Image (cartoon, rainbow, N blue to C red):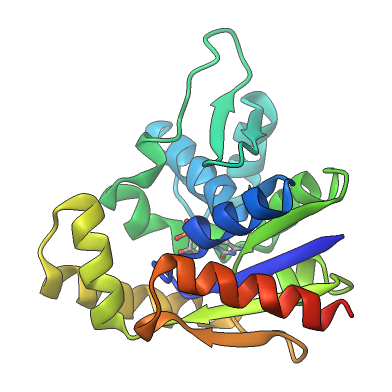
Length: 212
Ligand code: DC
């Protein structure tokens, strides 16, 4: 079984995917973490983030490994130092550049190949899991929430200013719009009035309905 959980930035996708995967006893895959790690490597190598051939060369030279832990995915470099990139992939510097990297079809192809190589069952979380990557998934969800609510949640995580975070999220929504659409057969869930457990329970109930 494949379950897809897509949604806008900071809509709680990772926490929801993690909770659903743990309830089902299967792994979850964070596609955003692959885009973030690719962006981090590009920034550290001082590459132009629009230079797709250079980026793909870098990804081939410095292979990444996604560790799909149920409580939170981690991403490592597989070269000699086995560095854990997870924390560094969640900075504002990466946030600001990741949409540009994720717009490159070559990079999207690279991420999708990593994901499709993983044997089912799993929960896949991102923007286009239910549309482009796993269109045949048995159950699909798309999470939304207003920019203000998402900014308040992110501030609790990162301690940043709400108005600035809200503006940055709205900008990223705009940049991500092309690859962030609900699949026609996805259940859309507005998480604004629900707490994390409420969203997880809604998804679990939806899986029963959709796969019945
Ligand atoms: O979910 P996230 O915020 O960690 O994702 C980081 C960025 O990666 C996001 O701005 C858009 C991009 N992304 C994407 O284009 N497609 C995906 N399936 C997942 C993420």
